[in-house]
Amino acid sequence: MLIETSRLIIKPISIEDKNAVFEYRSDTKTNKYQGWIPKTIDDVITFINKTAKKNNLPETWFQLVIQEKETQKIIGDIGIHFFGKENKQVEIGCTLHKKFQHKGYATESLKRVIEYLFNELDKHRIITSIDPENISSIELVKRIGFRKEAHFVESLYINGKWVDDVIFALLKKDYFNTNKPS
Image (cartoon, rainbow, N blue to C red; front, side, top):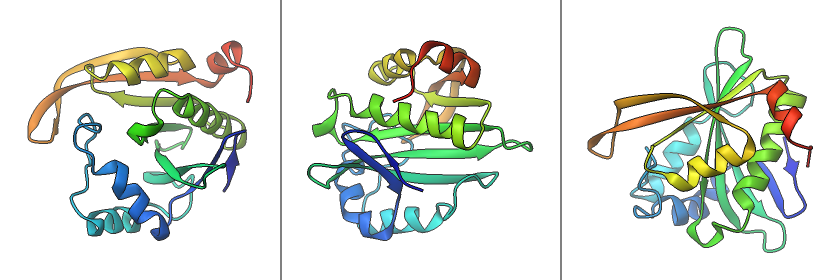
């Protein structure tokens, strides 16, 4: 599986990506809304080894890395959780290196992955879970076309505290009515 945009290559995570992933994922300030912040390279190795090696397997997480074409640098990742008995729904999440934020990379990579999920894998619905204080991520998913479906109060225990969780969702039919493929 290899997905490309004009500026990016989006590909399955591999053990060779461990140092690059650790570089941006271990930043506790930038990733304060993330449920997983590695403390060591070994944490990243364990994470990579636990992710599914093949995409579209029900009840698994599949992890992609986002690579800038020009520099070949890994600048972020996208996780995809395949769930549901019928395997027609997924949950996605995106993490981007702080030096590459606010440059359109998250929008570009997510839109292309969404198109892949809807067109190639024939998914019906995509959801994402966001801390309500993470305004940048909320604005990002709204721009792409997600709508807010739920707000759960103190429903997740992350980084030693109970936090709220807001669920946004996107239907295939709604996405293609408002977005042109990349």
